[in-house]
Amino acid sequence: MTDTFRDNPDLGRFELETGGLLSIADYRREPGRLVIPHVESDPALRGQGAAGRLMAQVAQVARTEDLKIVPICSYAAAWLKRNDPDLIA
Image (spheres, one colour):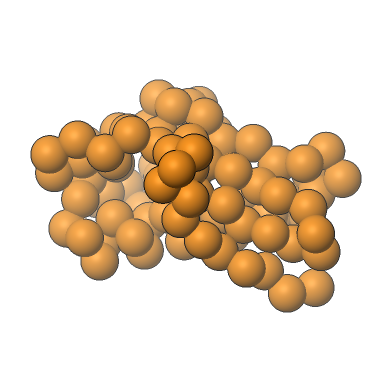
């Protein structure tokens, strides 16, 4: 299955589409920061790593835009601590 990542600023979320199903990371942009209050995958994608692939893309956006991430969501916080702790604000 191929993933398609996109920023959906109208809804304030990043989206990862996998086989027609979505994983989302809601966000709010603040000066120098990207606040992530919620990450969720379609139930059919759970356990397949979709949320982790989404977070990897979110981290890439943060690095590209020189932003730190404020992970309010417990999943986002745990993922960042394990994979990219330097991005945590």
